[in-house]
Image (cartoon, rainbow, N blue to C red):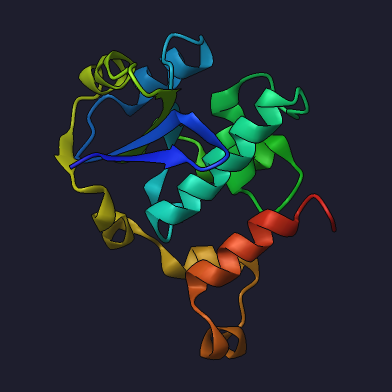
Length: 175
C-alpha cells in the first residue's frame, strides 16, 4: 500500500508515500499541517502523474534542505514547492497542497531508515481509505496537469507526460 524508497545521495534517508481517497477530514489535516503538527507533506494527488514525480520533488527538497538553500520554511513545504513548474510559492500551495474540499491526499514523509513511527503517526490522523500508491494516476486530472506544465500533444509523441513534467520541475530554477 505505501511506497518507501531510499534517496540515492542520502542512503540513510527514506521517502514514504501513502495514498488515501474518500478523505473526510481534509480541512483538519490542512490546518494541522499549517500549524506544523503533521510531519509530512500533504499533496493533492489530482495534480500528480506518477509516484516518481513525488520522489524527484522530495529528493530535490531534501538536498536543498541539507545544504541550507531551501526557498520555503520547512522540508515538507519545500516538497510541495518542488512539484511546481514555477517559482511562485503560494501558487504551488494552491495547486499541489491539500485544500479543505479535497477528498484524496498523498502523504509524503521523509525520515531516517529506522524512523517508521513517523509514517504511522501521520497516516493515523487521516480519515480515509488507503490505496496502493501506484494507483495515484487513477486520481490524476491529466488535462489540468498538461495545462499547468504546458505540455503539447507533439511533445507527448516523443516522450511521456511524466517525462515532460519531471523535466519542467527540474529546470524551473534555471529558467
